[in-house]
Image 1 (cartoon, helix red, strand yellow):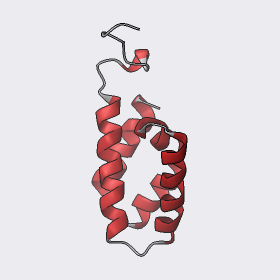
Image 2: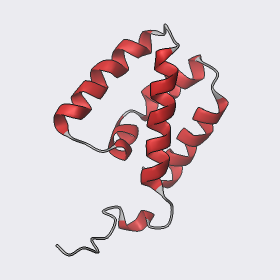
Image 3: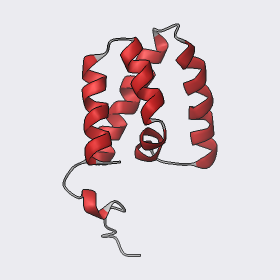
Length: 92
């Protein structure tokens, strides 16, 4: 491979999906810290699996769409839900 390796999500070029997925993960981490939701334990387990499998954030978000929706709906987190909707419809 050369130094100019293209984004592996070729059809997503220009959408900055990786950065948006990173932002979603930051939102998830922050909300997990101040929540006693049952989803927190679930996401801790899934994040540990993500680390073991060495998957990227966009893959994680795509794999956890429904769970993420449930968590952020429970918290009534509009900005996170908006970003998640955008990721689902444009990047996953």
